[in-house]
Length: 263
Length: 344
Image 1 (tube, each protein chain N blue to C red):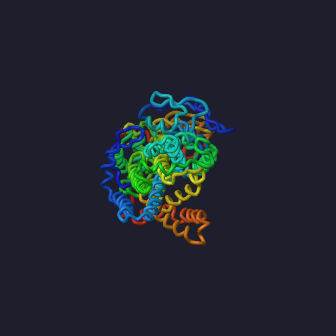
Image 2 (cartoon, helix red, strand yellow; image 1 turned 90 degrees about the vertical axis):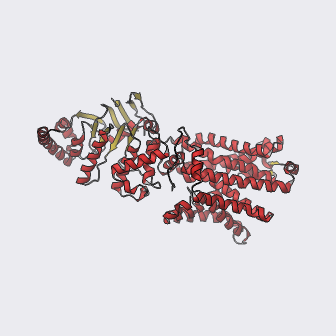
Image 3 (cartoon, each protein chain N blue to C red; image 1 turned 135 degrees about the vertical axis):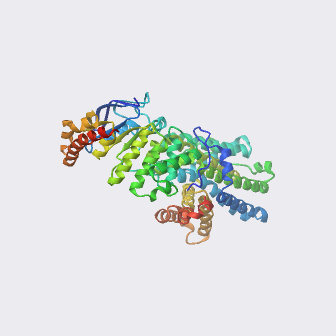
């Protein structure tokens, strides 16, 4: 198990953002994390990577207790993350942004090696030509790719992706999903928060569902899409419910096709 | 902003492999031009043996040393230090105390001044570096004022009358005239040193971490930059040379008093100098110093502006922040990308 969360809870004053959330992620898995808006998904990420400590509970990463450790300590152990609202280092170039990740991540490279890694990673995400541009000159979609590149520059062991597909069009989504698979194929364990159901269900090995800070369901994508608790949680958001329904129909259709062709 | 990522790190908290960095620094035309310009200007009064000119250049070089040091915190780390004079003043007091009470040599006094300021930065850092933005700025202001008041009441440091040295203290350096020249050379040397170190920091891994911190402290932490340590080291680095220079400057004057030592106006003027020239650049503080001291010279002799110098500095700062926040060199670097290598 790369990561274990046990009874993680987080309160902000009177607000219970997370209640006794427990789950585990084995090495090399892609774990999908879904839930209606405000369910506490980003809060959970923040508790995992040290942005703030959980009020209760324990987080274990690579066998070590990291509960309440600072983000830089957790990063140095090999956890990287992207943010829902991108945070580029504006007055630095695109390459320099990724170099920060490579220099200060768990591999702790020197500048020359970091620049080489940065160029590799930028090629991988498709920003190779923009390496010398200032980060502030990129558009939002490019900034999202930069956010991912920065996390990858650190060659993480566990990667937390927070809505990397948001705002992308259909073909871009396909490309990004492929990129996520390629990252996993390189041995990186991934936890992804996503709202795009069909994409998430397609790429995840396992899914956990949060609602009002509680873990309400977990299982394979097929199990979760058919779980009545999950559907009920989303009923407040009819579009979500519909896409989930559609998803479960597609899944059973797609899976039977795939098993015939052979993966 | 960075010319080329071309050094390897030996690892360790600071990641400043000095020999490798220096080897690379020599290849930067902009740095060589900057240092060369400073050397030429510095030698000008030496060659012409003009004492009035020497004093003018002394003031400019002093401003360069203070501004370049402040730039490490303001420009690279993004922390606004409104009380930067506190390092200059404390260094001055510690130096003068050793000179007056123990008859220490100027070199010991300067070293002690630098160490004292460095220690102050370390201790202060523990207390206030956790504050962000304006809170940090206000705290530094508070510290400076507290220091002024405290030292003004501290009898070993002479209380309100301060410390004064007998002119005999110059005898060890060949007399007053010689001492004035000697201290001038030392100051120019320190100014060159600080500009060089500023460049080395900028191209190092440490500098990259500082600038990441400046752009987005939280994102930098998530990427693994140990921000409290980086900020503390930057703060200490920005304090040492002002401390040494403080000892030197007050030695020359042979007298130090609380108000001139911890003069708020000096803090503000150093801030304006960095912002005017270009924060976060190496050449910026140098040009800013020359520019601002020139302006100040004009203001002091002009009957209208004589008494409102500080207001002019304030208005200038406001205009810079509103219209050219990157300062002169920063603006040029942004506008003429090809000149970047020449304008470090």
